[in-house]
Image (cartoon, rainbow, N blue to C red; front, side):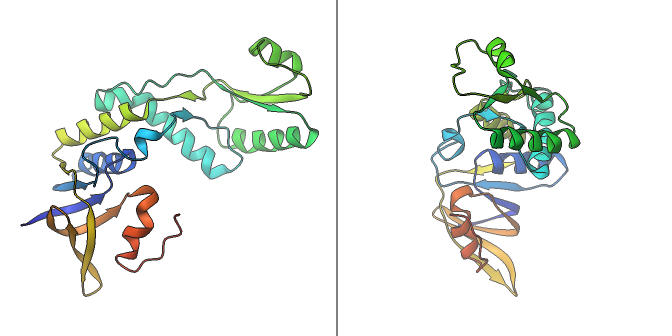
Length: 223
């Protein structure tokens, strides 16, 4: 049996679910999520540790983290699900001057991108922040109080439930086996549960994204 979707998203983890939600919110109709698992959370999302941080050394990663933080702060209002964003902070420790230089260089990038609350720590600061840490051999560190933890499966649930309310459909236990093209344009996704005629396909298969891309002869360096 062949069905139809305006957009088929291959991969029902938190990335695919987020894409489905945002497409539907912007008015895209007939969005379908396809996933080979029996239900939500059986792939990479369910194995995530749930750490959140903005302490990165490259501008693009800091920007993405701050963008994500803004989404976390409005997540419950948008989806009805609490992502359990706990701002307990991330503490990084340095035992060599070269490591402290790397911390300072990263701070310059972070502050330039808007992460102003990050701060350099001395030994006394570390002791005050966490007295259980052995300070032997340490010379300093870095701390950002807005780093912390989230619950990946709750974020997945929020996006899936919100997208379903907006009309997104789901096809679980359906492995993508082939993607057909007509005149160089993707026209059909074949799965173990039937075929789907499509206008667009989003590859959100995570670690398996390269295998999906190879079905349309697109080299994707994901391993």
